[in-house]
Structures are given as C-alpha cells and as structure tokens.
Amino acid sequence: MDRSRHVLRLASVFEPPVSEAHQVQAQAGYDPIGGMQNHTALLTRALDARGVRQTVITSRLGGPATVATLGRHARIHRVGLPIRHLRQAWAAAALAPALRAGPVDLVHAHQGEDLVALPLALLAARRAGCPLVVTLHTSVRLTVAASGPKLTAVRVVGGPLESAALRAADAVIALTSATADRLGDVRDRTVVIPSGADAGRFPASPGPLLAGVPGPIVLYLGRLARQKSVPTLVEAFGRMTTPAVGPPSLVIVGDGPDAPRVAAAIDALPGDVRSRVHRFGFRPHDEVPALLAAADLLVLPSIYEEMGSILVEALSAGLPVVASRVGGIPQVVRDGTTGLLVPPEDPAALATAIGRVLADPELAGRMRAASLQAARRYDWTELSGQVLEVYEAALSSRPVRPASRRRAPGRTADRDTVRRLGAGRAGTGVSGSGCPR
Image 1 (cartoon, one colour):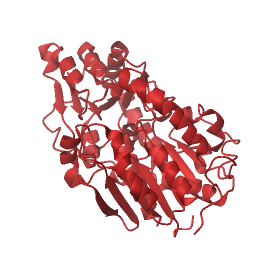
Image 2 (image 1 turned 60 degrees about the horizontal axis):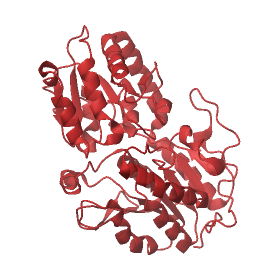
Image 3 (image 1 turned 120 degrees about the horizontal axis):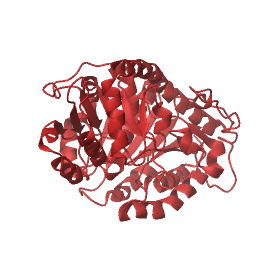
Image 4 (image 1 turned 135 degrees about the vertical axis):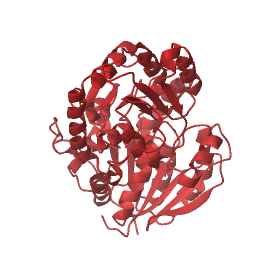
C-alpha cells in the first residue's frame, strides 16, 4: 500500500489517554477499556509503525472533544456529548469531522454493539468516493444474544442495518472464521484477521495489586456486563472443592453495569468462601500483563463472545484458560491444549474445569507451554500486515487470498474465499477501484 494514502477509521470506542482513564471510567459509568478499545488502539499503533497515515474518529463520552496525535502519522479525534447515557449520540458530533477529514483514500469502520459507526462510515466513503472496509467486532445479527429488552432492540434495529452495510462494503474483516462462515452473501469478500496482542509487553512480572492475595489465583479480568456472566463464575467458585494445592482465591478485576448482580452473587456465598473473593475495580490496560502474570488461571464465562481479546493476552502470558464454548472462543482456546471449554451458564461444569486445572500442575504446565506457542500467531506486527493486504486489495481492485486465510493450526484455509475482494461491484454506491487523489 502506498504509504502516502490516507485512511479514515471510525470506531465507537478507543482507549482513552492513560492519564484520563479513571476519570473517563467515573464519568462514562462503564469500563472505557475493553477488547474493541484495545484492538482499535493497538492496530492504530501497528499501522502507524508501518508509516500509514490515519485519522481515527471515535467517541469521548463524559468529556470535552479533543484532537491528539498518536505516533508519527495518526490523529485521534475524540468527539461526543457530555452525557452518560444515549451513547449512540456521539454520531451527531462525529458526522462533521468524518465528512471533512480531507482527501481520504479508504474508510475503515469498526463495528461493535454500537449501531452508528457503519452509517457514518458509509456516508464518509460515499462522500470521498473510496472503498469501505468493515471490521466486525461483534455481529449484532449473529452473535449478540437477545437477553433482555435492550439487547433485543439492538438485534431488531441493528441486524438489518449491519447486513446492509456489509453488503455495501468492499471488504469485511471478521475476527474468527466461526463468524465469517455465517455471513452468507458477503462471505466471498470476508477475511479472517483476529484481534492480537502487543507481544513486547509479555511475559511480565506480577504487579503489586495482587501481591497480598493468597494463591492459587483464579482471575476474571474484563467488563462486568450481562454478556460476561460473572455471577456464574462466582456461583461456580462457591461449588468448588478445595484442591490439594490449597484453597484458591477468586479475583475479579473490572467494572460495569452488571456490578450489582456480581456483588449479590458474592454476598450469597458462605462466609468462608466469600472471604476468598477479592474485587478490584477498573484498572488501566497497561496493568493487564502484570495481572495475568500474578494469576494461575484466567476464566471467561461469557454467554456470547465474538472472540474475547483477553484470551489472546492470556495466551501471550502463558496462562491456562477456562472459558465458555461459545462464538469464536473455541478458535482461540484449544480445548484440552491451551485451556478447557465448558457450556455457558453451567456453574457445575465451570467449577469442575477450574478445579481440574488447579489440581493438576502437569496439565497446567502443558497448557502454559502450548499457550505461549499459540500466541505467536496473534502478534500485531504480523496482523497489521494482513490488514494492509486487505487495504491494498480494496484500493487496487484485485482479488487476493490474504495471509489470514492461509493454513491455520488445525484448519485448512478455504481457497475460494475473498474471490471478489476489491472488485468494484455495481449498485453498492461504493467504488472498489480506489479513490481520486
């Protein structure tokens, strides 16, 4: 890709400056740094290191709008309204900078459960007359479980919007083949590129936060949201029998709207078990390597999950994992090799799996070694090159078979995938033939 080209990237979330992370947490009322936030920021840094010029437009809830530089070639526009609710309203402030970003050669949208990034990206791409690439972090049509009125509304409203935007895109990036293979008529221009980790930050030494927590340590690290089903983990911890290595501690690091349900689940535990549960609130992402280094096991008990980027970081830390067998998790955690998989919302199965890993040091050791080996395919230096291949194909109108669809561990790549990637399609309203300079 010609490094003089300008990529406009739209993402509803992006990591806040480290100095403001706790302030943003308090103002926004939810954990401001999750998997998608980390993905968008780490990809920006990796592309910047390759000399790609980027403008990133993202939300900034509960704070003033700012424009900052990241690295040598990236500008980060944080926009939004000083409100804690109605998160979709950031689109009102993002519209003008998205349409006035200057000469743009390619638009890249990051789609999560926020519904407004895709229409913004479509407008920007049509205004610039350039290709559109979409990374699907969470498919509201295929992945989001309709549990409760809010998520049901997200699926009802967002599903058709997502489908229309993906049909208009010149290329789609899915985080796992489990999602890609369900995309129907856009599968032929969908590439699988997972979230990655900053390999330079792993392995790390344990930090001071968990220094006083007796081991072995079972760790949950992430948002406290209904999707993550942390109360199921708390219930499972209460069902565990004490392994020979001694009574474990459960450490929960994170914050979010499901915090009251998590607290209620902890309060329901017997006193001797409750005393071994340690809750910590939001911690900045730069502390994650040290937290993982202090733990003996990571647990992700999600009800649904596109991929779970914390799992990649656990691999990088050489940490065994117990997780739900949902979404793209089985493609990250190899059952019996790098961790154990259990049915979602099954506290008995979760308790058994956690106890099995803690009670068998040899099994845990094999999982640690396998995790470090598996982590090599999630280095952002390599993954950013695969993203550039998608950009190049969309800009040059040539079909490609990107590196991400070559042979992967335990899976033969589909050689017919991505046949029409970058081949401008009539009727989409977005040209795949590149942009005027």
